[in-house]
Image (cartoon, rainbow, N blue to C red; front, side, top):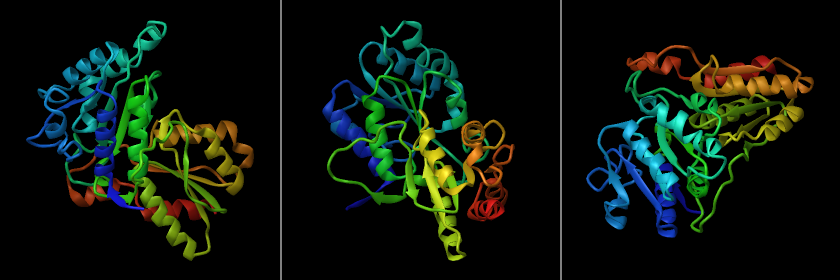
Length: 324
C-alpha cells in the first residue's frame, strides 16, 4: 500500500469531500493560494476550488467560528482551520455556547455540521501561547465531538466522517505528526467515530495513548519487548465519543494500564480515562493505574526545558515497569 504524509492525508480528505459535496467549504487564516495553511494542509485547494470555497479570513478566531456556525445552521458544511489550538480560546463562546448547544436547544430542528481543524502539542519551540494540548477542554462540553487521529490513515478517515456528520467536531491534529508517513489506501474510505484501534497487541500491560504519544508508546513497547514485557497499545482515535469498551477489554486481558497524553495531568484526558477504569474495570486490575502526562506548567520556550516537560519513551517505560 502507498505511504503518504499526515498532512497529505488530510488534504486528500478535504479534496475528496469538496468534490463530493458542493456545500463543503474551507475558511481560516492564510489557507488560500498564497500560503496553503500554516502547516500546508490546504496547499493547492484554492487553485482547484476557487476563493469562494477556500476562504482566507481576517485574523479573528471568533469571526472564523462565528461564520462557521452561521453557515452550518443554514445548510453548508464548513471546515474551519484555527492556526494553533491555543487560539480556540479566542472563540470559546462560539464553540462551547453556540456550536455545541444549538442542536439541543432547538430540539434537533437545527444541525451544526461544523468541523474545526486545529493543531495542538509541543515540540517545535514556539512557547506557551502556541504549544498547549487542550483536548480535555472540549471533552468537557456536551454537544462537541473530539477527534484525535495519530496516523495518516486515521486522519483521512476521521476527517471524512467529521465532514459528513451533523455535529460540531473539534478535529485535533499534532504539529509533529504533519510530516509523518503511513499507509493510506487510494480508494475512498471513512473511519467511524467512537471506535478505538489496537495499534499493537500485547499481554502484560495496556498503554492507552493519543495523538503523537501513540508513536512514543509504540517505541516504548518495542524497547520493553526486548526485555520480555508484552505491551498492548490502544489508540482511542476519538475522545468524544470514547470507545470505553475496547479500553476495558484490554485491561481485562492485561490487568495493568498506563495512560499517556500530552496535556496537563490535572483534570486531563488521562484523568478521565483513569476514572472510567476505576469505576468500571477496577476488579480486573493487578496494579495501580499509572498516568504519564505533562506537569501542570506552561510550555517553556527553552528547548531543553520544553523537552523536559513533554512525556517521552523513558517516562512511559518507567511507568510500565512500575505496574509490571
